[in-house]
Length: 238
Image 1 (tube, one colour):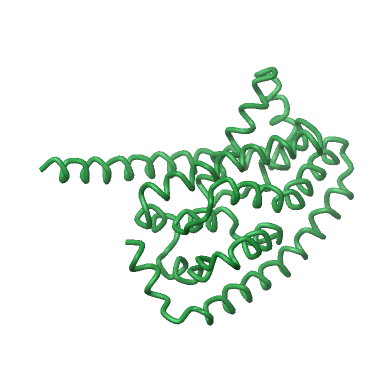
Image 2 (cartoon, rainbow, N blue to C red; image 1 turned 135 degrees about the horizontal axis):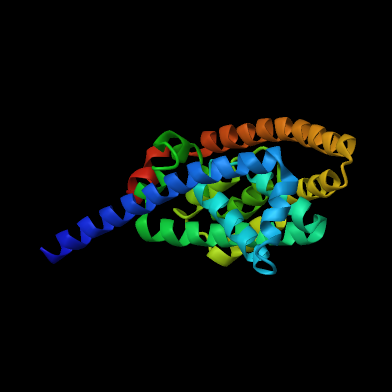
């Protein structure tokens, strides 16, 4: 009886948490859209908090990672506008690391049922080759380093593996630097009203993202071919 009650409470807490994330997701999406339309307004908004504005930015980046489907580039651009290239990058990386830590802790606690709210089982199966510990670190670093790959979704999947939390966070934080700093540089130039430079940065980033997506698809396709029984990992995680 007691076990059944705990099971019900677990389900209710997961549903409640996911509902909160979805609501926050839509709210943040609207807010991030306003950042894209008027970055200067975002800087002014953060400045009203004083030094606590940096904490607010970290929390926003953390929530972006948790919700996963929100574009992180928008808030990274805002960070560059508000705090410049380097400081904006550092704050974004701290927020992303915090979000990744929370995801890994929650997924390791609640398992695949939580991941399935963010990823269909077919996608989880496609990534099952990442359970190979010998390849895990190299592939994760590559996936996070390449622009245009679904980084935050991969973080949810990583929680299903035996990956060491702090190793994963350290590795992915370093790998995120090029994509984050690109956005904060663009934000810094946007603040200087150098629109040609901003356009050039995002044009190059867009091209790399296209290449990155094809590389990611190739990694998944190759990894999928190396898994003898794709259902074995998924079934054992349920």
